Length: 139
Length: 394
Image (cartoon, rainbow over all chains, first blue to last red):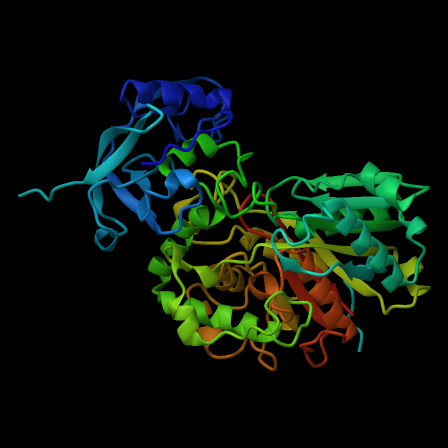
């Protein structure tokens, strides 16, 4: 849907998108204290270390909050409305949340707390975006 | 009665000015610089001082009317201090006031112009994609369609409503109250356009839970005020309005918050980034919430008003909807809010117009006067960190 271009990017963000291009959702993790952090940053806010690695996100995902957008804030979004934006939280990763979307739920089906599963979609600019679908209940 | 000041001789606001407020784009032919000059000249006239007495300028949100442009147009002979407060939108409205106070208290300047001038051209609308493209985390937001302030704030408000059990319809009370206030204020862009509940409830969704009428206007206009020392203020024609406290602040961990990646601490997510600021502000001013006669609360979106009422100690968490529904925020209530109409119904001048209205209340010249108004609170945009707020008194 959205193909909103981005003018500039912090150098700290480049590795995040490089991993996405390989369909890997990775976030920064401190090598000194193991705390996850997002958005990317040059220093660990918990311990001050500058030593970090990029690690695949593996914790269970859930919908922390969301909105359903009805008004297209750009021409590029005119065909996309209504669309949702999901704030996704991961188990064991604290406040390192991801802004994304849920691809298989109608607006009225979205619920704060619902379990989600990562998958990948390519946008009109060719970027691979980490997106989510509802996690089927275990039977 | 004069409310006692915590600190002797606080800086004072001695003049206010503004241009006509209009819908966006209507003053594009004049431009932001001309509007800023008009507002500054009006503030000087209001204060009864020669505009050439201005020796400092403070603004926020990257105002385009640079100090040297203002110095050139107004012929300022002694411009010796200028300060820009970081942060998009109205986060710095009271921060610029705080800068001005610091400048006059430290002797770096004596008569500081605080100003904000906005012309929203078709290509530069704050409510559209690109209006806040300078946000450094935008590459993590925009690919998913999170491109405007309404969309950025909506999930925060959604979680607030979810956690507190506040129904979406409760937001109507805020929008209706401020529109009613604006019907007494000829400066308001919505003056003459009363609003009823049915019209509010029929207004279209922008980004749930925000309807069109939960979102502030898109306006053109400029706003200015003059800050000086208590000594200089005592010699001027207007009753000085004392700045008991003006501060910037924010909560721990909120830095990449509402206008970033939504990674603030979970417990504060559905909040306003102002609890620490409020505590510090009240202590600096030497007042408590029960001393506040009225408040001008940054209402870029109506749920922000509910959240701010809680952050600034007027209601317990989750109680704001009941408070506004009880009529306490209307003229004559316990805490009249946004008595000129606020950003929702007066104009969107990034909240500096809220400061001007607080000054009018304390002078007794508001079009929606609060009886015996002694102390007022003004809050600024809560999106980025640090945000800001101020407490003013007669």
